Length: 84
Image 1 (cartoon, rainbow, N blue to C red):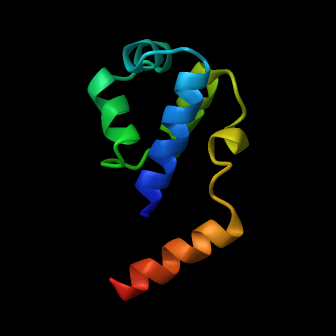
Image 2 (cartoon, helix red, strand yellow):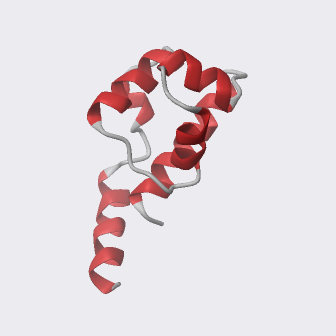
């Protein structure tokens, strides 16, 4: 799994847990619905500014948004990237 896919999966989980649609999250974060969709599908990687905006829109801390990026998960990402 690539980092964009790992992030997208987490974003979708958090959004759904809060009962938000992609459009509602997009509006709260001042982003487009298409961009939220691309993030959740792992097609785009957010900038630091976007991470903060998403965290605020979800009413969580940025570390919670990045909780899936554990040391073992990142290590697996690096190993797979070097093999590809």
